[in-house]
Image 1: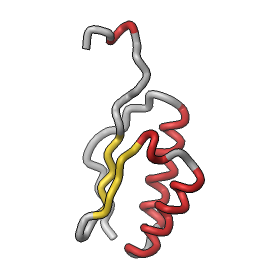
Image 2: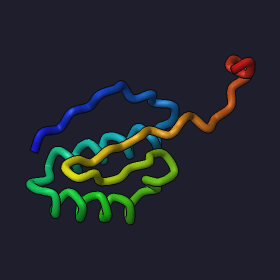
Image 3: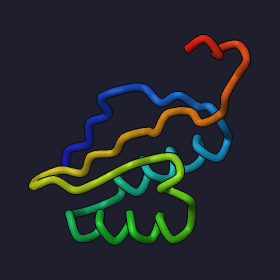
Image 4: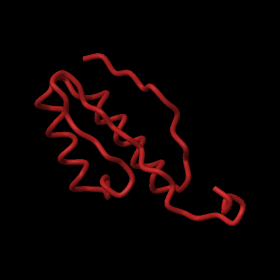
Length: 79
């Protein structure tokens, strides 16, 4: 399998960073589509994956989208 990370990760909290690293490891250690699907389901059962990421399976790929930072900051209140 070929793994491509197309954008950077914004580490806005420790929990999201840990989940991201566990997600990347799950993807990298998968041998095939079945083990990848099982690994994602196992990860989803262990951590709040859906709180920080949206993901899905395409015909020949897994896509993962990092949800926006939910923490409001006074510094960025004008956005």
